[in-house]
Image 1 (spheres, chains in turn orange, green):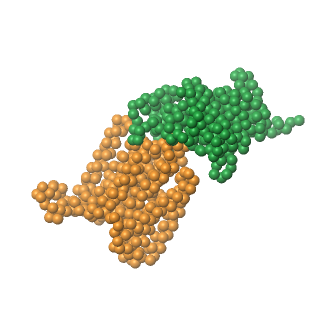
Image 2 (cartoon, helix red, strand yellow; image 1 turned 180 degrees about the horizontal axis):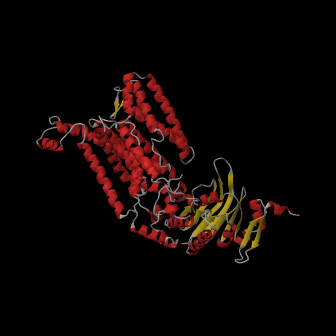
Image 3 (cartoon, chains in turn yellow, brown; image 1 turned 45 degrees about the horizontal axis):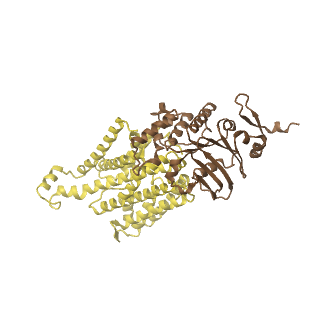
Length: 341
Length: 267
């Protein structure tokens, strides 16, 4: 149960996360005075007349929104996958969704589809990444669910194998790519929320929001799954359906995010674990709080990427640099002694 | 409410084609503890899963109060029958009270929030299983016996009429085994119908009102009072090995042991 101290901590976590989102609006490579922007807006200037307003509305806000959506989505999917596969390391990333997405993007780069078309707010590169990432996860799911229930073991083996296949596909694409393409490809691999304008953010939000609502609705059932699929089934949970919904919707969410902001790792892995130490393991609390904290965490990483490190460091590097050591710290805290499949 | 759960000539086979049992009849009544016994591979656990609707028999039916179990929705079923699998290993640490509250699942609304009534039921289940003092403990830190009693509380929180338990005492020492069986008997006296799969024939003889004996490939070869089921000839057939039965010098219940091959070969 949530004790009073825990409720306060949860509240603090949410306030800090929202504070980080607000801070990421104000902090960046350009110094923008929010007062100036406010004054300009009060004076009736449009974003085309005021430089402050222009940066705030055209660059900062979409960037913060992209970080919020991506962080929230990755963290929530992490919660779902950890419960689903009864494994503290389980995320779509562990199963190779990012590698497959990268292969999709690389293929689009090599065949110079860059400006070929845009569908529903997705460029050719993004659409190709999305397609490959989700197709990869669907194939893994089909391989592991031939019998009525999902086998975490087969999932992991299929995931690792497909991931290696995708890696060699990536090598092949790199071999064929021209040097200037290679630079773009390398940069894509590092991830970034440097999104300008609203088309990409709106497309991301429209795709991800229903997925997140569906995942949040599975919370009570995922609690049951924590005690094994048989006890859950005995209590009336439709376990195969729960597994299919959580896996496929979670994979789609991740594929959408990877296609827009690149493979940003570690968020789905560490945010649920960190939040669990505060909220406990009930998914009805854990999932919404992870959602907010994931958004806040990615905003924080984006601030670090823009301010604390030289130049504008790709955010994927920052999440890994912050997330890796934190995960090792959790390991030393014997946080995972509970987890046994 | 008195309820009766029965398997009516049920046949079940797994996908690989091996018949686990054919034409099995077995029943669980309110107020009674039914023991399901038999050697490994005789289909005890499978029968339990067929009885609670988790596995569908290929032929025959499972009836709950003369209604087909398959006509119940899974939540309706979970409000009537509770199933406790063998060796439940959780992955999350939860408090004992939270674990018991998980049992309220089939009664919750679409938003799955706990109402005061649900907490009240959970408190009562803690009381019925004598686990009130463990209320705030982390489930992971409990001993085997304590875990089993808390898990019993959590399935009681489903407010079922029939409990189906798969080897609830298999990982416990003799004292805790007796404690769980005594608790089951008390619950049965309070009106629950209970079916329990067990390997312990002595406990089955002592604590169960009726027994169902299964043999590999033969299905149910005997059912009825423990004294009529636990006979040397029936047990020797079921286990395909010499089994001896005597009378317990203190309790008077059947006392069962298997002869070692050397003993059997003496001339």
